[in-house]
Amino acid sequence: MMRKWLIALSTLLILGVVNSGIWSSEKLLQDGEPVLLELAPLDPRSLMQGDYMALRFAMTDAIKAHHDTTTPLSNGMAIVELDAQRRASFVALDQQQPLTNNQLRLQFRLRQGQVKFATNAFFFQEGTGDVYAQARYGLFRVNQQGQMLLTHLVDAQLQPLGQAKQLQPNTQE
Image 1 (cartoon, rainbow, N blue to C red):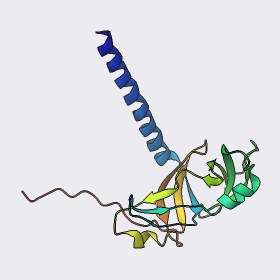
Image 2 (image 1 turned 90 degrees about the vertical axis):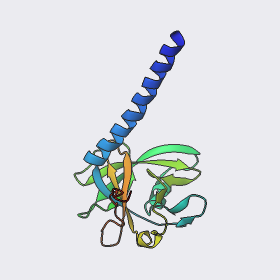
Image 3 (image 1 turned 180 degrees about the horizontal axis):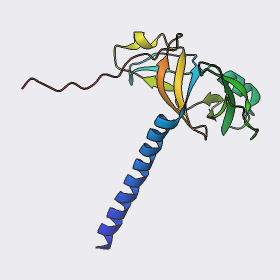
Image 4 (image 1 turned 135 degrees about the vertical axis):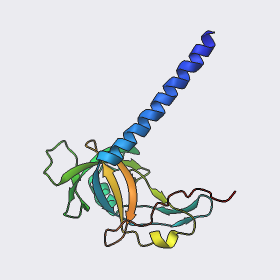
């Protein structure tokens, strides 16, 4: 009997953690500030994982130049300034200094000498790689704590690439 309660409690705990993560991501998508980071795309294909574009962001070199790279694993915050189109440019590493109205903090990770933001890849439907080859920016949603979620890739005219297709009901029986 005790074992059943332990299993039930563990299941509820796991479901609570998972749902909390989903809720947090949904809130970030809904309330986060839109921010565009310039891309420096890498290899756009992977035969093992399907179609994707490996991403590298242009400001990572500026962050590396200001960051202590002797630490193998490190997390930090970068301060960026947003222009009128919401494009971000690196200002400084965060030292808890006050921000101006057009500045935000962005979380980053330093792994094996490389600066990483929220993601390092964008997956897309097989056969649509030509659409994403035009990508010049990653469109993120960013919260007050600097957490980021990539929502779209964007072209040079700041237009989102690709489109979500609605599921069509199967009318054939």
